[in-house]
Amino acid sequence: MTELGAFRVHSDGKTLFYNKFAWNKVANVLFLESPTGVGFSYSNTTSDYSVVGDTKTAHDNYIFLLNWLERFPEYKSRDFYISGESYAGHYVPQLAYTIFQQNKSAKKNRFINFKGLMIGNAAINEATDSAGMYDYFASHALISDELGKQIRKTCNFSADEVSIECKKHVDASDANTFSVDGLNIYNIYAPICKNSQITLFPKKTSIRNIDPCIDQYTYTYLNSPHVQKALHANVTNLTYDWEPCSDVLHYNNPKDYVSTVIPELRELMAGGIRIWIFSGDVDGRVPVTSSEYSIASMKRPIKNEWRPWVFNQEVGGYVQVYKGDLTFATVRGAGHEVPSYEPARALTLIASFLKGKPLPAFQDQN
Image 1 (cartoon, helix red, strand yellow):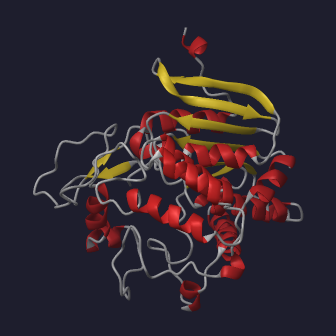
Image 2 (cartoon, one colour):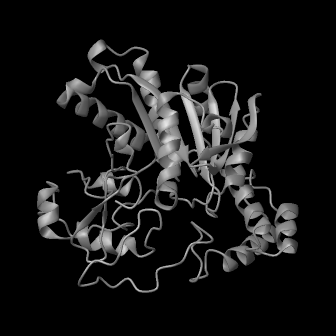
Image 3 (cartoon, helix red, strand yellow):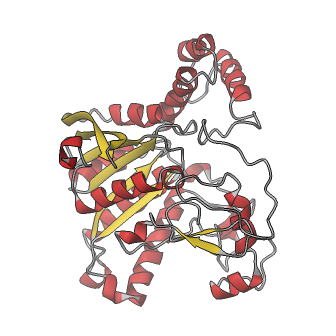
Protein backbone atom coordinates (compact mmCIF):
# COMPACT_ATOMS: atom_id res chain seq x y z
CA MET A 1 0.00 0.00 0.00
CA THR A 2 3.05 2.28 -0.05
CA GLU A 3 4.94 0.75 -2.96
CA LEU A 4 3.74 -1.38 -5.88
CA GLY A 5 0.12 -2.10 -4.94
CA ALA A 6 -2.93 -0.84 -6.78
CA PHE A 7 -3.94 1.66 -4.07
CA ARG A 8 -2.40 4.02 -1.55
CA VAL A 9 -4.00 5.58 1.52
CA HIS A 10 -5.02 9.23 1.73
CA SER A 11 -3.91 11.39 4.67
CA ASP A 12 -7.40 10.97 6.22
CA GLY A 13 -6.58 7.30 6.92
CA LYS A 14 -9.96 6.33 5.48
CA THR A 15 -9.92 6.61 1.72
CA LEU A 16 -7.72 5.35 -1.08
CA PHE A 17 -6.31 6.67 -4.32
CA TYR A 18 -5.20 4.76 -7.39
CA ASN A 19 -1.57 3.93 -8.21
CA LYS A 20 -1.31 4.10 -11.98
CA PHE A 21 2.14 2.50 -11.79
CA ALA A 22 1.00 -0.60 -9.87
CA TRP A 23 2.71 -3.82 -10.87
CA ASN A 24 -0.60 -5.53 -11.57
CA LYS A 25 -0.53 -3.53 -14.80
CA VAL A 26 1.86 -6.20 -16.12
CA ALA A 27 1.15 -9.32 -14.03
CA ASN A 28 -1.19 -11.03 -11.62
CA VAL A 29 0.37 -10.09 -8.27
CA LEU A 30 0.08 -12.24 -5.16
CA PHE A 31 1.29 -10.51 -1.97
CA LEU A 32 2.55 -12.97 0.64
CA GLU A 33 2.98 -11.78 4.24
CA SER A 34 5.76 -13.82 5.80
CA PRO A 35 7.16 -15.13 8.08
CA THR A 36 4.09 -16.30 9.95
CA GLY A 37 2.88 -13.45 12.14
CA VAL A 38 3.74 -10.64 9.75
CA GLY A 39 0.84 -8.37 8.81
CA PHE A 40 -2.42 -10.27 9.06
CA SER A 41 -0.82 -13.71 8.67
CA TYR A 42 -1.15 -15.94 11.71
CA SER A 43 -0.64 -19.40 13.17
CA ASN A 44 -2.57 -21.40 15.71
CA THR A 45 0.76 -22.66 17.09
CA THR A 46 2.33 -20.21 19.53
CA SER A 47 5.87 -21.49 18.97
CA ASP A 48 5.67 -20.36 15.34
CA TYR A 49 6.10 -16.80 16.60
CA SER A 50 8.98 -17.43 18.98
CA VAL A 51 11.39 -19.50 16.87
CA VAL A 52 11.65 -18.24 13.31
CA GLY A 53 14.41 -18.55 10.75
CA ASP A 54 15.33 -18.65 7.09
CA THR A 55 14.70 -22.33 6.32
CA LYS A 56 11.42 -22.45 8.23
CA THR A 57 10.18 -19.35 6.43
CA ALA A 58 11.05 -20.82 3.02
CA HIS A 59 9.32 -24.10 3.90
CA ASP A 60 6.17 -22.38 5.18
CA ASN A 61 6.01 -20.18 2.08
CA TYR A 62 6.44 -23.18 -0.20
CA ILE A 63 3.59 -25.03 1.51
CA PHE A 64 1.46 -21.91 1.23
CA LEU A 65 2.09 -21.69 -2.52
CA LEU A 66 1.22 -25.36 -3.06
CA ASN A 67 -2.04 -24.90 -1.15
CA TRP A 68 -2.84 -21.64 -2.92
CA LEU A 69 -2.38 -23.25 -6.33
CA GLU A 70 -4.62 -26.11 -5.28
CA ARG A 71 -7.25 -23.56 -4.29
CA PHE A 72 -6.83 -21.66 -7.58
CA PRO A 73 -5.75 -24.32 -10.11
CA GLU A 74 -6.35 -22.01 -13.07
CA TYR A 75 -2.98 -20.42 -12.27
CA LYS A 76 -0.95 -23.65 -12.14
CA SER A 77 0.23 -23.46 -15.73
CA ARG A 78 1.18 -19.76 -15.59
CA ASP A 79 4.79 -18.63 -15.51
CA PHE A 80 5.65 -17.88 -11.89
CA TYR A 81 8.12 -15.25 -10.66
CA ILE A 82 9.12 -14.08 -7.19
CA SER A 83 10.22 -10.60 -6.17
CA GLY A 84 11.06 -8.86 -2.92
CA GLU A 85 13.25 -6.22 -1.32
CA SER A 86 15.60 -5.79 1.64
CA TYR A 87 15.76 -8.99 3.75
CA ALA A 88 13.77 -10.63 0.97
CA GLY A 89 17.27 -10.92 -0.47
CA HIS A 90 17.14 -14.02 1.76
CA TYR A 91 13.45 -14.89 1.57
CA VAL A 92 13.20 -14.84 -2.22
CA PRO A 93 16.29 -16.89 -3.18
CA GLN A 94 15.61 -19.38 -0.38
CA LEU A 95 12.00 -19.88 -1.46
CA ALA A 96 13.13 -20.03 -5.09
CA TYR A 97 15.74 -22.65 -4.21
CA THR A 98 13.13 -24.70 -2.31
CA ILE A 99 10.80 -24.63 -5.32
CA PHE A 100 13.67 -25.43 -7.69
CA GLN A 101 14.73 -28.48 -5.65
CA GLN A 102 11.20 -29.74 -5.01
CA ASN A 103 10.28 -29.40 -8.69
CA LYS A 104 12.93 -31.97 -9.59
CA SER A 105 10.83 -34.75 -8.07
CA ALA A 106 7.41 -33.12 -7.87
CA LYS A 107 4.38 -34.77 -9.37
CA LYS A 108 2.54 -32.80 -12.03
CA ASN A 109 -0.06 -31.46 -9.60
CA ARG A 110 2.66 -30.11 -7.27
CA PHE A 111 4.94 -28.65 -9.94
CA ILE A 112 5.34 -24.85 -9.79
CA ASN A 113 6.14 -23.27 -13.16
CA PHE A 114 8.93 -21.14 -11.68
CA LYS A 115 10.87 -18.99 -14.15
CA GLY A 116 12.78 -16.28 -12.30
CA LEU A 117 13.35 -13.98 -9.35
CA MET A 118 14.03 -10.31 -8.84
CA ILE A 119 15.35 -8.76 -5.63
CA GLY A 120 15.91 -5.09 -4.81
CA ASN A 121 18.26 -3.35 -2.37
CA ALA A 122 18.67 -6.85 -1.10
CA ALA A 123 20.62 -8.37 1.78
CA ILE A 124 22.58 -11.00 -0.13
CA ASN A 125 25.96 -11.52 1.48
CA GLU A 126 26.59 -10.15 4.97
CA ALA A 127 30.27 -9.31 4.56
CA THR A 128 29.96 -7.40 1.29
CA ASP A 129 26.63 -5.85 2.35
CA SER A 130 28.34 -4.31 5.40
CA ALA A 131 31.48 -3.19 3.59
CA GLY A 132 29.41 -1.64 0.83
CA MET A 133 27.21 0.23 3.29
CA TYR A 134 30.08 1.98 5.07
CA ASP A 135 31.79 2.78 1.76
CA TYR A 136 28.51 4.33 0.61
CA PHE A 137 28.33 6.43 3.78
CA ALA A 138 31.82 7.78 3.16
CA SER A 139 31.30 8.41 -0.57
CA HIS A 140 28.03 10.29 0.09
CA ALA A 141 29.35 12.52 2.90
CA LEU A 142 27.31 10.85 5.64
CA ILE A 143 30.55 10.15 7.47
CA SER A 144 33.97 11.72 7.06
CA ASP A 145 36.43 10.39 4.53
CA GLU A 146 38.85 9.78 7.41
CA LEU A 147 36.33 7.61 9.26
CA GLY A 148 35.56 5.69 6.10
CA LYS A 149 39.25 4.94 5.65
CA GLN A 150 39.53 3.76 9.27
CA ILE A 151 36.60 1.37 8.80
CA ARG A 152 38.16 -0.06 5.63
CA LYS A 153 41.50 -0.41 7.44
CA THR A 154 40.30 -2.03 10.67
CA CYS A 155 37.18 -4.00 9.70
CA ASN A 156 37.05 -7.49 8.28
CA PHE A 157 33.34 -8.09 7.89
CA SER A 158 33.99 -11.68 6.80
CA ALA A 159 35.34 -12.51 10.26
CA ASP A 160 33.14 -14.10 12.92
CA GLU A 161 33.74 -11.12 15.22
CA VAL A 162 34.83 -7.57 14.46
CA SER A 163 37.82 -6.13 16.28
CA ILE A 164 37.55 -3.58 19.08
CA GLU A 165 39.02 -0.92 16.77
CA CYS A 166 36.53 -1.77 14.04
CA LYS A 167 33.61 -1.62 16.47
CA LYS A 168 34.73 1.81 17.70
CA HIS A 169 34.75 3.21 14.16
CA VAL A 170 31.50 1.49 13.18
CA ASP A 171 29.79 2.90 16.29
CA ALA A 172 31.01 6.38 15.35
CA SER A 173 29.61 5.91 11.86
CA ASP A 174 26.26 4.63 13.11
CA ALA A 175 25.94 7.65 15.41
CA ASN A 176 26.01 9.87 12.31
CA THR A 177 23.60 7.78 10.27
CA PHE A 178 21.25 5.35 12.00
CA SER A 179 20.92 7.42 15.18
CA VAL A 180 20.08 10.74 13.55
CA ASP A 181 16.36 11.52 13.72
CA GLY A 182 16.54 14.02 10.85
CA LEU A 183 17.83 11.53 8.29
CA ASN A 184 15.96 8.81 6.45
CA ILE A 185 18.72 6.25 5.95
CA TYR A 186 16.47 4.40 3.48
CA ASN A 187 16.53 7.43 1.18
CA ILE A 188 19.25 9.84 2.17
CA TYR A 189 17.80 12.73 0.14
CA ALA A 190 14.12 12.27 1.00
CA PRO A 191 12.19 14.48 3.43
CA ILE A 192 11.25 12.94 6.77
CA CYS A 193 7.78 12.80 8.30
CA LYS A 194 7.40 15.83 10.60
CA ASN A 195 3.66 15.64 11.26
CA SER A 196 1.99 12.26 11.06
CA GLN A 197 -1.42 13.46 12.22
CA ILE A 198 -4.40 12.15 10.28
CA THR A 199 -6.22 14.95 8.46
CA LEU A 200 -9.96 15.56 8.36
CA PHE A 201 -9.89 15.80 4.58
CA PRO A 202 -7.37 14.16 2.23
CA LYS A 203 -4.34 16.22 1.31
CA LYS A 204 -3.38 16.61 -2.33
CA THR A 205 -1.74 13.40 -3.50
CA SER A 206 1.06 12.51 -5.87
CA ILE A 207 2.12 9.02 -6.89
CA ARG A 208 5.48 10.33 -8.11
CA ASN A 209 6.25 12.20 -4.84
CA ILE A 210 5.34 9.93 -1.96
CA ASP A 211 4.16 11.52 1.29
CA PRO A 212 6.83 10.78 3.94
CA CYS A 213 4.04 10.19 6.50
CA ILE A 214 2.23 7.54 4.45
CA ASP A 215 3.13 4.77 6.92
CA GLN A 216 0.94 6.44 9.53
CA TYR A 217 -1.98 6.79 7.12
CA THR A 218 -1.66 3.11 6.23
CA TYR A 219 -1.46 2.15 9.91
CA THR A 220 -4.73 3.96 10.61
CA TYR A 221 -6.45 2.48 7.58
CA LEU A 222 -5.45 -1.14 8.28
CA ASN A 223 -6.52 -0.86 11.91
CA SER A 224 -10.01 0.22 10.94
CA PRO A 225 -12.46 -2.58 11.98
CA HIS A 226 -14.49 -2.35 8.77
CA VAL A 227 -11.31 -2.56 6.66
CA GLN A 228 -10.14 -5.62 8.56
CA LYS A 229 -13.56 -7.20 8.11
CA ALA A 230 -13.52 -6.46 4.38
CA LEU A 231 -10.06 -8.03 4.12
CA HIS A 232 -11.31 -11.16 5.94
CA ALA A 233 -8.45 -10.69 8.39
CA ASN A 234 -8.36 -12.93 11.44
CA VAL A 235 -8.77 -10.14 13.99
CA THR A 236 -11.08 -11.68 16.61
CA ASN A 237 -8.43 -12.56 19.19
CA LEU A 238 -5.59 -10.25 18.18
CA THR A 239 -3.78 -8.75 21.17
CA TYR A 240 -1.84 -6.29 19.01
CA ASP A 241 -2.72 -3.77 16.34
CA TRP A 242 -1.50 -4.20 12.80
CA GLU A 243 1.86 -2.41 12.64
CA PRO A 244 4.46 -1.71 9.94
CA CYS A 245 7.03 -3.30 12.27
CA SER A 246 5.84 -5.46 15.14
CA ASP A 247 7.43 -7.05 18.21
CA VAL A 248 5.11 -10.07 18.03
CA LEU A 249 7.55 -12.00 15.88
CA HIS A 250 11.09 -12.84 16.94
CA TYR A 251 13.36 -13.74 14.03
CA ASN A 252 15.93 -15.18 16.36
CA ASN A 253 16.93 -18.74 15.55
CA PRO A 254 20.74 -18.63 15.10
CA LYS A 255 20.72 -22.22 13.84
CA ASP A 256 18.37 -21.23 11.03
CA TYR A 257 20.26 -18.33 9.52
CA VAL A 258 22.86 -18.08 6.78
CA SER A 259 25.08 -15.07 6.18
CA THR A 260 24.92 -15.44 2.40
CA VAL A 261 22.52 -16.69 -0.27
CA ILE A 262 25.14 -16.64 -3.03
CA PRO A 263 25.34 -20.48 -3.18
CA GLU A 264 21.58 -20.61 -3.81
CA LEU A 265 21.81 -17.91 -6.47
CA ARG A 266 24.63 -19.76 -8.23
CA GLU A 267 22.70 -23.02 -8.32
CA LEU A 268 19.56 -21.30 -9.55
CA MET A 269 21.51 -19.63 -12.37
CA ALA A 270 23.06 -22.97 -13.28
CA GLY A 271 19.54 -24.36 -13.49
CA GLY A 272 18.44 -21.72 -16.01
CA ILE A 273 16.52 -19.47 -13.62
CA ARG A 274 16.48 -15.78 -14.62
CA ILE A 275 17.82 -13.49 -11.87
CA TRP A 276 17.65 -9.71 -11.69
CA ILE A 277 19.10 -7.67 -8.84
CA PHE A 278 18.13 -4.01 -8.71
CA SER A 279 19.17 -1.13 -6.50
CA GLY A 280 17.68 2.27 -5.78
CA ASP A 281 20.80 4.42 -5.81
CA VAL A 282 19.99 6.76 -2.88
CA ASP A 283 19.33 4.00 -0.34
CA GLY A 284 21.87 4.05 2.48
CA ARG A 285 20.75 0.88 4.26
CA VAL A 286 21.48 -1.74 1.59
CA PRO A 287 23.06 0.59 -0.94
CA VAL A 288 24.13 0.16 -4.52
CA THR A 289 27.73 -0.46 -3.41
CA SER A 290 26.61 -3.43 -1.30
CA SER A 291 24.85 -4.97 -4.30
CA GLU A 292 27.87 -4.31 -6.53
CA TYR A 293 30.29 -5.91 -4.04
CA SER A 294 28.01 -8.94 -3.56
CA ILE A 295 27.69 -9.49 -7.30
CA ALA A 296 31.44 -9.05 -7.76
CA SER A 297 32.04 -11.82 -5.22
CA MET A 298 30.16 -14.22 -7.55
CA LYS A 299 32.88 -13.69 -10.18
CA ARG A 300 30.50 -13.86 -13.15
CA PRO A 301 31.85 -12.91 -16.60
CA ILE A 302 30.26 -9.78 -18.05
CA LYS A 303 28.00 -10.35 -21.04
CA ASN A 304 26.79 -6.79 -21.71
CA GLU A 305 28.77 -3.84 -20.36
CA TRP A 306 27.45 -1.14 -18.00
CA ARG A 307 25.14 1.29 -19.80
CA PRO A 308 22.33 3.74 -19.02
CA TRP A 309 18.74 2.60 -19.44
CA VAL A 310 16.03 5.05 -20.31
CA PHE A 311 12.55 6.02 -19.19
CA ASN A 312 10.67 8.97 -20.66
CA GLN A 313 13.81 10.18 -22.49
CA GLU A 314 15.75 10.37 -19.20
CA VAL A 315 18.29 8.07 -17.60
CA GLY A 316 16.21 5.69 -15.50
CA GLY A 317 19.34 4.05 -14.09
CA TYR A 318 22.19 1.86 -15.25
CA VAL A 319 22.36 -1.82 -16.12
CA GLN A 320 24.95 -4.55 -16.59
CA VAL A 321 24.28 -8.13 -17.67
CA TYR A 322 26.38 -11.12 -16.63
CA LYS A 323 26.68 -14.56 -18.15
CA GLY A 324 24.31 -16.98 -16.50
CA ASP A 325 21.21 -14.81 -17.01
CA LEU A 326 22.07 -12.40 -14.19
CA THR A 327 21.15 -8.73 -14.61
CA PHE A 328 22.06 -5.89 -12.27
CA ALA A 329 20.14 -2.62 -12.63
CA THR A 330 20.17 0.60 -10.69
CA VAL A 331 17.15 2.90 -10.41
CA ARG A 332 18.15 6.54 -10.42
CA GLY A 333 16.72 8.60 -7.57
CA ALA A 334 15.09 5.68 -5.78
CA GLY A 335 15.54 4.79 -2.14
CA HIS A 336 15.30 1.41 -0.43
CA GLU A 337 11.64 1.03 -1.41
CA VAL A 338 12.10 1.57 -5.15
CA PRO A 339 8.41 1.57 -6.21
CA SER A 340 7.66 4.20 -3.55
CA TYR A 341 10.17 6.76 -4.76
CA GLU A 342 10.35 6.01 -8.50
CA PRO A 343 7.13 4.15 -9.33
CA ALA A 344 7.22 4.74 -13.09
CA ARG A 345 10.83 3.57 -13.42
CA ALA A 346 10.04 0.60 -11.19
CA LEU A 347 7.17 -0.42 -13.48
CA THR A 348 9.53 -0.29 -16.48
CA LEU A 349 11.95 -2.47 -14.53
CA ILE A 350 9.43 -5.20 -13.66
CA ALA A 351 7.88 -5.14 -17.15
CA SER A 352 11.27 -5.73 -18.78
CA PHE A 353 12.10 -8.48 -16.30
CA LEU A 354 8.85 -10.35 -16.92
CA LYS A 355 9.23 -10.09 -20.70
CA GLY A 356 12.81 -11.30 -20.51
CA LYS A 357 13.88 -8.23 -22.50
CA PRO A 358 16.74 -5.78 -21.88
CA LEU A 359 15.90 -2.50 -20.21
CA PRO A 360 15.26 0.14 -22.89
CA ALA A 361 18.23 2.04 -24.31
CA PHE A 362 18.27 5.57 -25.74
CA GLN A 363 18.47 4.26 -29.29
CA ASP A 364 15.20 2.39 -28.64
CA GLN A 365 13.43 5.75 -28.17
CA ASN A 366 14.17 7.01 -31.69
